[in-house]
Image 1 (spheres, one colour):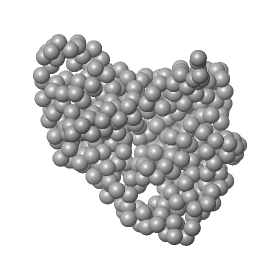
Image 2 (cartoon, helix red, strand yellow):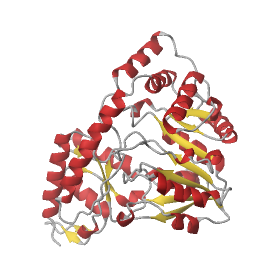
Image 3 (cartoon, rainbow, N blue to C red):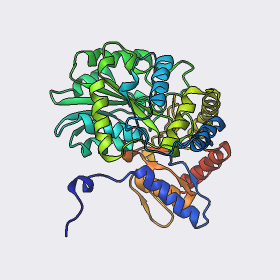
Image 4 (spheres, rainbow, N blue to C red):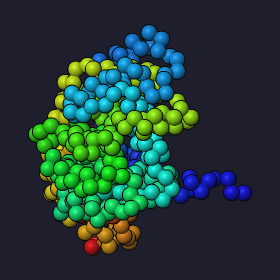
Length: 400
């Protein structure tokens, strides 16, 4: 009896979550695994945010929340977008969801029709392609590499646009590469997009505060030529160490915001009332915690780049944001282990490192980039030093 829908059967499982689960299973067996597979700050949620959640419980914020989110939170987000990003959204154009992933999927489901093409520069976060497939759209992958600092060029974008193009998803700072588009680089893309008014721009800006360029983050929504058809996806998970609170949002043209609210009203309703009040405190309270965590991530970035460059066969750039390193590792493909096990691809290499070095990483193929591994450095300096020592030793034991 065939009981699972074709829609779900066609989806790939999240390899980042799968590797994290394997890591957890080994840890449960008493094995000392260092998990570099998960994109999650290792810091606790700041005290003032937790206090706001406690107050919300005491103040009986325990009833259904409005489908698009509390107006006070939506106003706080609109103020943040104006103050930090120089973009203007009415609170009515903001819809709060259960994490940025939920907000992004809402937007794709609300705007993409069967056969519509969605441009996705790669390497790309694991869920972009699957979300487009879920909406019965067609992902159009535009590959970049280490030599490009993993950034799409205006010429590549122009070549990818067709009569069927519905949207482009742009992630800066990037998961999985940490690459950041400069103002000039964004301007080049905007020049192309300005000539194609039918293309929607979906800007995933969840890592905006984890930036090492020495300047301010530039949102593509701040360019007037395309502002009216740009959707911002963001949330509190990364900047405020609130991954488990599950609060994200889209800021979108009014028609899209209404469509997302309609959709959300039918299958999740409003996000957690308590988590929303915590998120409101995150946006309206002191931002010192954001800078403290950013500084820690930058120090770790410097550490892992140095350690990775000491490993023969690793090719790395210097990420300008987020908390990921994306080394090119295909020089190890074709190697064998002492017991004759073959390392044919990134998945084999990631499993080898988990089994032998007890370090969890993710195959670059999960991000549409075979030949690479993604390593998260959202863990302590001590863990990073030990993890890279283990990786270096395990790779040195391979036979090429």
